[in-house]
Amino acid sequence: MSERHGVVVGISGASGAAIGVRIVEHLAQNPRCAVHLVVSPAAERTLAEEIGTTALPRLRALAFRDHAPSDVGASIASGSFPVSGMIVAPCSIRTLSAIAWGQLDNLLVRAADVQLKERRRLVLLVRESPLHLGHLRAMVQATEIGAIIAPPLPAFYLKPQSLSDVVDQIACRAINLLGLPDVAVPAQQWHGEDAGRT
Image (cartoon, rainbow, N blue to C red; front, side, top):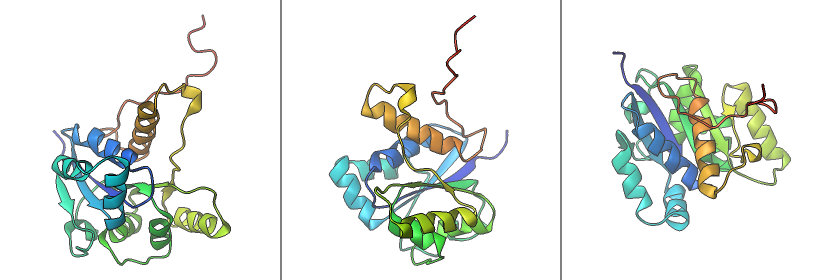
């Protein structure tokens, strides 16, 4: 049996906290995965407002390890610590910009920077609309240094029946973008207009 995959999940203060929660829930169900959680102070407020005051304690209980965002000396701040990738969901513009230009003033951004320098996958679910040129340039910069920009957009062609369906599809897609077969989760897929025809 191979080793567990360490996956860092960062939750920043943008709206859409339910997506980060669902990602952690999926990963925590996988015995092959160890979730390292970093929740920013702004995300704590968003979690409370969008989901409720019990969301953060439940998230922390699901994680293999919960890291304080101020702890820049944590294990995941070093490239020598073995993790397999990171997802930031949702990713605020402030966090995106800090990652893009190396402003490493907290653990969430530092851990993201480690993924880039170690050539591991970093998936950023950037949550903002509309976008001005500064936002777009930050996305380009992050992409050029190795991040995957994956805005949390509904897959309407899959005909979701509820908001929960939308959140789950986005969460599964983000996890699968890590490219880790042992961590991948089943996700609804488009099979083309000819699916089911003989």
